[in-house]
Length: 217
Ligand SMILES: [Zn+2]
Ligand SMILES: [Zn+2]
Image (tube, rainbow, N blue to C red; front, side, top):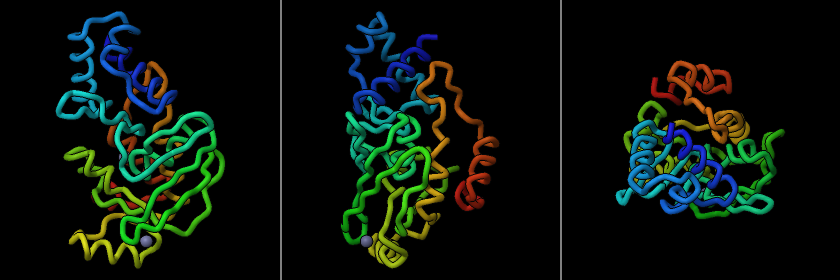
């Protein structure tokens, strides 16, 4: 399957370099035509393996992002845009190394950073806020990821909700965020990766300690 090879190449490239491949990288490395590469990218986007922008360029391959969404993730040799808080905290496991994750509080702009590794939950009393329930996240996935941020505390979140005229979404502490993120993207760098079906996803959310509001119940 050509789309499987393209998916695998995109993910490996993102993991190793922090950026997605250009179309010409795909044609050169996989020995395919521009049309074949474009068709494979569209098919992968339809199946939610990738997110493309209006020019059909790769915007996201969760948990990787080609654009800033509030987080940076610094590895030993690679710098990634971390996507949302969920995506950023997933990177240490996926790339199997300790990283430094940095962000700012959307309310007060205060800077926060954590060393995060695959084995232990990070310390910190900040909170993660997920504005959109996961069963609606693909309606506008860039908006959804852009609104899965970390705030200093409940006061900062409440002030931000009033300022932005938003209703409170799902709130979790950093330890739960880390648990949610840890194995969520497991296998995504492998050639034969299969996406979770919705019922397995809900089971995973329950196991890491999230309640129904997280996935829209
Ligand atoms: Zn704050
Ligand atoms: Zn995300």
